[in-house]
Image (cartoon, rainbow, N blue to C red; front, side, top):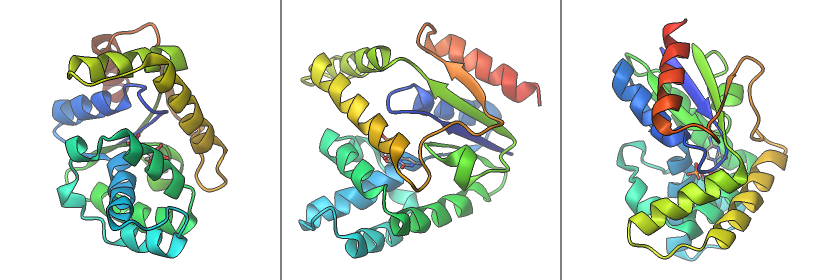
Length: 205
Ligand code: C5P
């Protein structure tokens, strides 16, 4: 069983993916963390982010068993991840690992930008989770402030819009719903309602 969840930054897809994995007893892979881990390695080594050879090498060496959202959540890492995510050689290396992960029994929930379209086009269920940029920026701001961190709504909104633009307009695997994806707009929905709707979709298989 494979559940593919795609959507833009801060749409709620990560929380949904985690909860669906727990509900259905599946593994979970946040594929954004794989791009972040490769980007973090480049930042730590002081390698220029436009060096595709080094980026591909960093991608090949990502350890899928040691992906930690807390250490990879820095804003700079997300920004760097979206810059190296436009490179086909980086994507090829990471997609290979993601597909291998999806094959581990009894199956997995994967969330990202290209799961339903590229990584697992034969997934049993595909969800595309969206919310307006304003709602996503508000959620991200509240989340950071709730953790005692500084967060400025206007800056976060501008960042989200820029990252969405880069993710949606790149040539290789742009962010877009698969033709057979169920669309879930969470702008006017709390996470509990979104979760119940997603469970209904999976149960309706
Ligand atoms: O989801 P997250 O914000 O952690 O992803 C960081 C960046 O990694 C995204 O902005 C996107 O450019 C890239 N990414 C991707 N394909 C995926 C997951 C993430 O291109 N499947």
